[in-house]
Length: 219
Image (cartoon, rainbow, N blue to C red; front, side):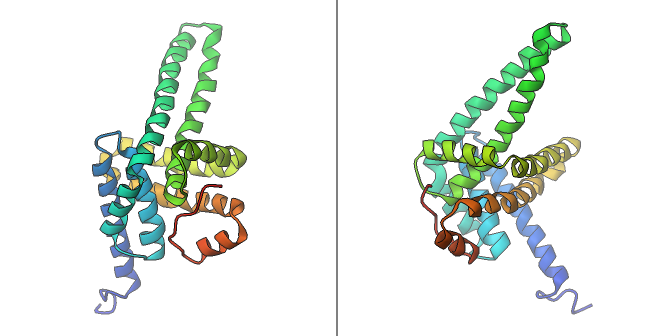
């Protein structure tokens, strides 16, 4: 029994990692409360997952807080732009759903709007990851993250499905909000990092795989 509860045992390491995931999710929820800071909070969560949780670099709070401060201005601008797109698509979805229920031929466009909305939600995950990993202006983040998502539609689906599953879990039980943000971010980071590696220069890709925490320049 003493071996099981040793700090270095697999069981204790798993429990500590789970606790860290819950703490990271709570930090994301708290820093996302003003809504306008959700972009910076998401970039900070991505950085925390990539560096601290996946690579055991640094400390949870210092990693999250440092990334949040570093990304606050640019990620807020990016998030507000993305929020505008999401709001527009949500309004369109409501309009075309009403037309569909009313029997209008234009109601069939509801499915197109729904597909575009799913793509926009996936795009927000790429925005957070790209903003966390690369330097550049806000418009560079918006443009390049969309290009990377569109260039790899199968991988984009692999990013969207965890978001969908996480949202379904939170709807069925709000308590899942304590773990879902970090779990979804972790799964997405596995897919998105592979996309980034495909488009990095060889020396940058080698540095990233070696665990470098330096931010790359925009490509």
